[in-house]
Amino acid sequence: MSWKNLIFLFIVFSFASCGEIIETDLNFKDSSYVSSFTTSDPQFDKYKRAFEEDYYVETGQVISTEAIHINLKDKVDDKNSYVGICIIWPGGRDIIIKEAYWKTLSEFSRKAIVYHELGHCALGRTHDNSLDEDGRATSIMNQYLIAGSQFYSYYEQYIRELFTEF
Ligand SMILES: [Zn+2]
Image 1 (cartoon, helix red, strand yellow):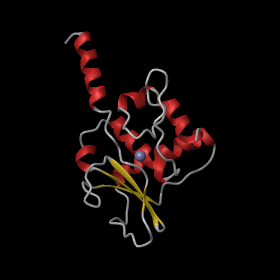
Image 2: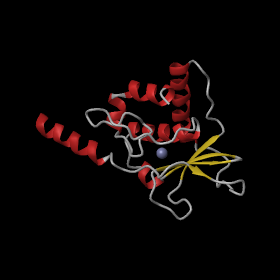
Image 3: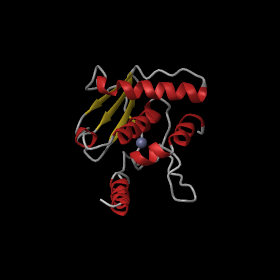
Image 4: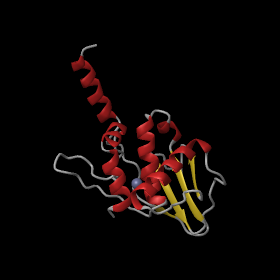
């Protein structure tokens, strides 16, 4: 395969994995809300630890994501048009990621989704759809999922923005 074809494929896949709306926004519930989960799926532990470590590196402060349960589920409240959702209620916080979608994602796209949802659930951030002069999303809190390749290429900028610029 020629370099030209490889670059073309790279571009196609980059665009294929972005433009997906993650969710409409933070999902607040009242105290009558009952979570379907009492634990966090262990496959998300590595992303939670990485988030805590990145937070410490950027801010010098400690953050714990221990109480935030992250699980896979294909339907929430009969809605299925989401990629990930952060649910906040007086008793806790849940992150639910769409299982059918998760299975199709690269490692960095997975990390981008978990970091985005933790941005809501652990930091209380809302969406930020700012773009730079090249049209690139400047925040992982963009409402549209950032391609894993883009998250990887601009990792330091995204992490700094996530933890310090809001
Ligand atoms: Zn979001």
